Length: 215
Image 1 (spheres, rainbow, N blue to C red):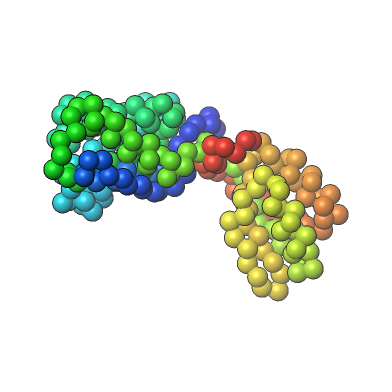
Image 2 (cartoon, helix red, strand yellow):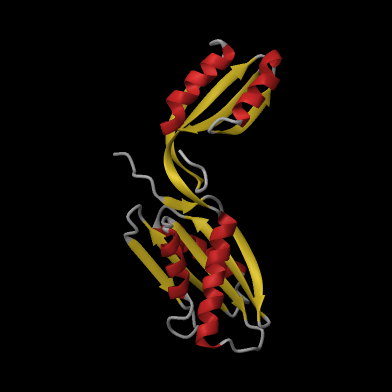
């Protein structure tokens, strides 16, 4: 059964900042299962084993059915809860966020901790990018070199993402397009090339498209 569109993270990424001499590093990763989220947490704990705290939250399932968080030694309610609240506010699921803290010697107080961990979660989400999962088709398309410049110019303004472009005796594009945009795109492609380009539909899958992109 087809999945409904839902928001998740586009990529792994991190961002860091300093608050009153404490170093905070926000990390995010798309995770389709709870096992993947726990693996990510274990990876971050190993990488930052010398940190004072590795606080986290994750939400799993298109309907946000699994939600877990931890303060990892910070005062109750000052770390894990702010992280998951930021994720919920952005509507993100199938994602995990870890905010690492290296204590700088200055106490932040409960309010300061909540603000810092909220900032860490927001920084992680912004670095990762929030995208919407859409049914997506992947295509292969071969063209001759005389058509290369015209094709590049055409694809630049189309709702597609070119994943690869290989140069042999012909030019082979690998690109993806949301299924909602597929029919219109193929019609414009055929018109642009007078039917000379014959894209081959390879597979249909669910992929995260940037939130600002409109289907």
